[in-house]
Amino acid sequence: MRISPLVLLAALTAAACNADPLPNLTDGASETGTGTATGADTDTSTTATPTTTQGDNLCVPGSSAGCTCPNGNMGSQECNADGNSYGPCECEGGGSNSNGDGTLGPTSTTTDGVTTTTEGTTTTEGTTTEGTSTTSTSTGEDTTTEGVTCDDPGPEPNGSEANAIDLGEQGCGAMPQTVEGVLDGEDDIDWFSYHGMWNALCIVGPNTRHTLSAGDDVRLCVFADCDQGAANINCPNGTSESDSPGGGHPGCCGDGDVDFNVDCGILNPNNARVFIRVDQAPADACVEYSVAYDYDE
Image (tube, rainbow, N blue to C red; front, side):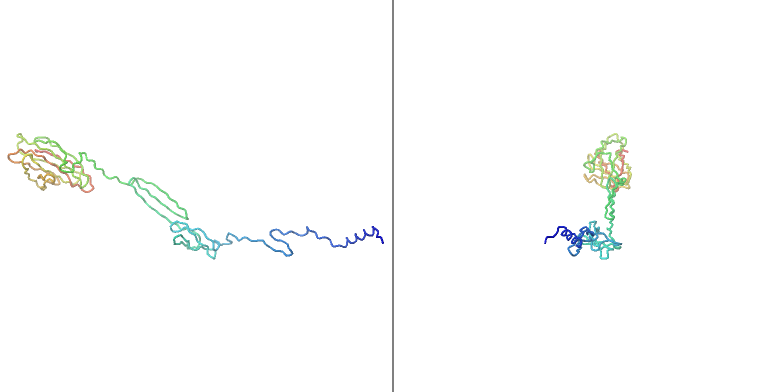
């Protein structure tokens, strides 16, 4: 039998009304993050391990931190299991530092040094605190005392009898002359000489006189070398007989004036080369002196 189109349309409409509605694909909330739906929910999200301490903990147990070794180099120390203290500072080559309060803290080192130079005083102070090194240098006033300089007005060298400074001639009746010098310590020696002239106009003598003036204790020696014959002299009180080291000429030494008569023999003129020696100043002393000499008083 032929079905009327109207009947077919009515049957289709009734079937559509009795069917279950299609699910709404937009119903519900979609999961955010890393969760997926495959019939069973699987959570693949991860939680990062905190890198900072929580609460009152000082450090993360097992973590390392830098520290300062006794020699100033850097070492490392490990956070203890309680998270509130560090173990000893481990240093390269052995040795360690530990802090009594269990907290991280580099050691402090203080070094003071003083260097003195001849031009001035230089002081260097170095302080290392909390791992920071500070160095300062200061130059103060000159504290070096300059030594005394001995300026000898006379010619040099004259440290031996052979190098004695020639003072010229000194005759009877002439005015006394004076020689000046400086002794630089106990090892310095000054030699001088003059030629004493005697003639028929001279009556008695020669009576030589040598008067010493000095800023400190020194010794004066006088020796005579006759032009002809051997010199005969008598040393006065307070002096001692002595021969010159270079020529073996007779003479006298004392701590003050040295006066004596020169006798070259009855048949010889009393002309003589007279040597003056000044020595034996105190150690490390600079002594100025003068000797007034006269061949015929």
